[in-house]
Amino acid sequence: EGPRQEQSVGHWQWASERMGISRDSRHKRRATGGKRAIVRKKRKFELGRQAAMTKLGSKRVHEVRARGGNMKYRAIRLESGNFSWGSEVCTRKARILDVVYNASNNELVRTKTLVKNSVIQVDAGPFRQWYEQHYGVEVGRKKKKKDEALAKDEKAKSSHVLRKLAARQKLRVLDPVIDDQFANGRLLACISSRPGQCGRADGYILEGKELEFYQKKLQAKKKGAKAAA
Image 1 (spheres, rainbow, N blue to C red):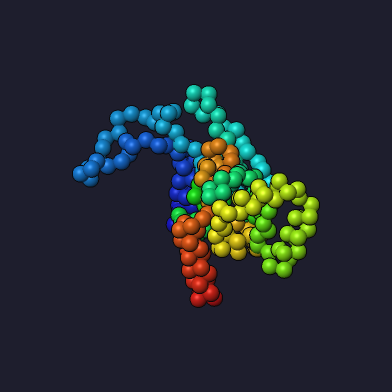
Image 2 (image 1 turned 30 degrees about the vertical axis):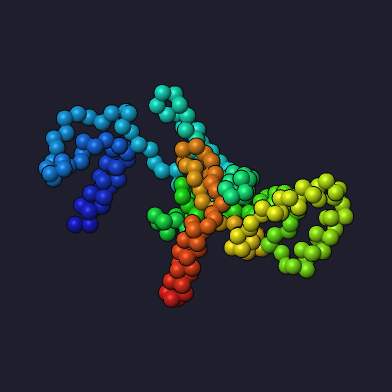
């Protein structure tokens, strides 16, 4: 029984290597549940490829020739991307620090796999730098340190710049939750591009109801982990 079982396993491995990935629908059953007769072979335009499973690490992108001579850019590893801060209309290149949540599969979080709609942590530095320059207000720091830094900055700036900053500050609204994230040096963001197709991990900073939703999910995940331990 042992050698026969080994032989059957080897056969299946050989068959899976030979078969490949196909995106056809001929193998599907009818809406009534009946089987369809397969009357033709697979076609080149129905082929599928293995998932990129982009990991967090130093940048590595493969070029893949696709149908019609078009190119796909298969990201094998990525470490940064362009992220948009929607409410402030500001986009900056930021380093990706960690993968913290994925609605489809926790395994993708454990292995730090970058896919579309992954919730990640990005470096808050570029956004903090822009915010402080644009509004003349320090974020994510204690009040004493803020006051000292503001006093130094006001001496160095011209009256025209100070008037401009004062006008901007009238309309300024910063969510306290995002301010707390600035203090930690990490912002929660979501990937909106497809790293395995375009070779980039671009996205947007989470805000408002969406940020609340994912923070609740992360807290529930932490509680579950503590209970299991």
